[in-house]
Amino acid sequence: MTGHLRLKEQKAVTMEQSRIFQRATHQVMPVALSGSGIYITDAQGKQYIDGCGGAAVSCIGHSQPAVAQAIMDQLGKLAYAHTSFFSSAPAEELAEYLVELAPPGISHAYFVTGGSEAVEAALKLAHQYHQENGQPQRNKIIARWQSYHGNTLGALAASGNKMRRVAYADILIDVVHIEPCYPYRYRRADETLDEYGRRAADLLESKILELGAEHVSCFIMEPVVGASLGAVAAAPGYLKRVREICDRYGVLLIFDEVMCGMGRCGTSFASEHDGVVADIYTIAKGLTSGFVPLGAILLGQRVYDMINEHSGSFRNGHTFSGHPVSCAGALAVQRFVQQHHLLDNVKRQGRELERQLLARFGSHANVGEIRGRGLFFGVELVADKNTRTPFGAQLGVAARVKQESLRRGLLVYPGSGTSDGVNGDHILLAPHYIVSEEEIGCIVERLAQAVDAVLENIA
Ligand code: PMP
Image 1 (cartoon, rainbow, N blue to C red):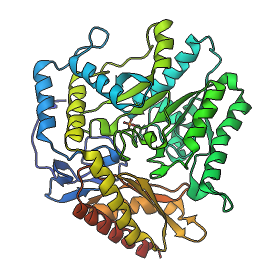
Image 2 (cartoon, rainbow, N blue to C red; image 1 turned 120 degrees about the vertical axis):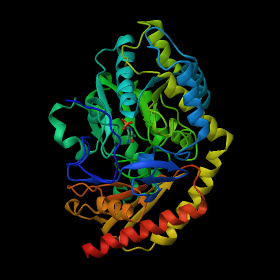
Image 3 (cartoon, rainbow, N blue to C red; image 1 turned 90 degrees about the vertical axis):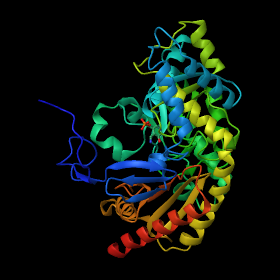
Image 4 (tube, rainbow, N blue to C red; image 1 turned 180 degrees about the vertical axis):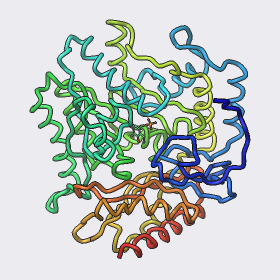
């Protein structure tokens, strides 16, 4: 019970030694001590090149004095003021900045502390919109399988990631899922990409009609699927058709850009690529590059007006919403991205990443697909390339590649195959926006060694 603070020498910790309850209890975790550029150093002095920004979070380097200074300056001025009493200068400035950055029609920002909270807020806002529009019966949410929207109960219910849902399935709210747009697995041999995109989008219309359009509140999707599939962008035309279908039936469209947004795909918003505008966006991760926790939803004028002209308040709120220090940190990160023209580097090095991945893995017998956009790439690993048969989920191929990569001083983000064989293992790469060509070479080389080491043990 004394709980006194002590400094002790830190090495890697097993979960038995650690008082932090996280992840698998049998795991051994290196203790991260410092970060610089795209490298993290652990307590034993081992350096890791960060090939995935954690979970596509860190993007401007692990230490940036200008960001640290902005955070310190805000702490010195005002650490916290509850949003039921005050707005704050950094929150106001960040909202202005984001609205300006966002596609036309987006008029307001609402701040939370991360991606899951943003998704919860988006789903609730859609619900409230319909209530205030005199359509309280619109209470059905449609999402997609093989998606990830977060870990809180509402966000997890929207998530179509079976592995993450399974332990909690019986306490999740009823969200209806449709098949995602995943050309590698679902496009028929006789279909063009465009035809497939249309057919995949039409699954949304069929589902809305099956449920009764008057009962449907919103459709939530990741424009480029991250954690659950590994950088799978929708086929051309899919987003546009989804937008048309939502408009036809009065359903609100939510783009979850928590992972793929804020420059990760080479444009500020991933969906800019398709020229389609959602009613609500969720963002987090790259917004602050991990320096401080912050998420946001961005909403269109139509949604704002509905609330503003009726109840006048969104019935949602968290103690740390709009935290001034987080908003100041986000502003400094966004300034850094702009001042250094980092999205140009995302596009340039994204092409380099694709080139090197294709050169190293293009004819690899166990690499089914290399896909992605900007600095957001997935490598799908399969047991048989011709039949696209995934490895058995019990083999844990992606998790093993992560471990072998760690041993070689590389961070990559694994995605497991599902036991129903619907999707295979993948490795997600999301290097920092400041990455150089040489560093990309190092990431790809270490990954190739790790993949081969795992496959040798399986064969
Ligand atoms: N949405 C998407 C698309 C995500 O990738 C994630 C996190 N990986 C979340 C929501 C949840 O965000 P957080 O972990 O910050 O709660």
